[in-house]
Image (cartoon, rainbow, N blue to C red; front, side, top):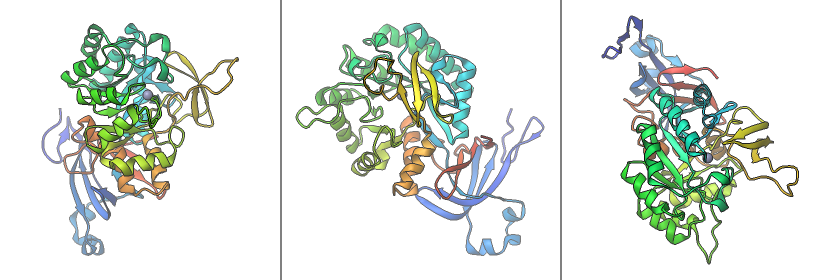
Length: 409
Ligand SMILES: [Zn+2]
């Protein structure tokens, strides 16, 4: 039991109470010298220091009582609404310990909040996966579940097992939502499938975000899905038809809706899934408040090249790029099969490409937290959970605090 009160105790153990002193990203401003006070798992006070404070440390009770100087810039912990794992393990492994390890791996790399993503599976496996992740959400290791499939387009299935794709069925959807115990927050779907638009309606009525992805939807059908409540593009451009000027598909429908504020766009801006110029152009066109950086990370994130399994399919990671194993008779490379970066690395890449730190960080923190309804995340603010990343001069993660605790990598 936690005793209420600012510096309370937890069953006899002194509750964490830390004051950090560092440059900090507060809103859109990098304040050069800030005291951030953390009590238990929350940020309890924030105070930019004046020159007078800094010059007279003895006169300041906080400084005198031992603020810890942090080497780097404090930014909010990152939020990833589309990740399948990392550290050699994945949520798709259907194993509670592997799933917990995948979540902890993401935390140590700066992603302090996340939706755990599954992939297309048989009805029984999917139900099992949802049960495993619902337990993880109850334990606070993840913030919800993302079902990527199985209601996706055959022609744009990417690394999803094409033999298991299917049309939405209300019975299966209801059973999955029940198994998720309120933790399913997002479903990626192809609205052009039979009952695809019905699925958008069922999910929206249940308070679950519908995301358009792995789709061959026309402009008209994508727009109908948005009107029915879909409010996210699953990794825009990847897993959907390119924008043909005479046959506009989902891409321009989603861009247009994002510019109007009706849709948020996921970008896997890792330099492999999208060129930096594409990512830059989208953010400039629709505004950073409608763009979220996602990792789409599979098990290889944080580990490296090698052989992996994703949703039952063999994946080979070479030079940091994950692709389906094309088999011995293949004439070309296999489909890209998920990411190997973390959101923090995508943010650092955007900064290296010239975007301001506040802009790049917001696409990995405030915007996804706001879209996902995580009210106490995504900002360094009084009352927010004490989730912080310390960034070095290259905007790379040097240290991570989650819920008031420093994590070791
Ligand atoms: Zn994915």
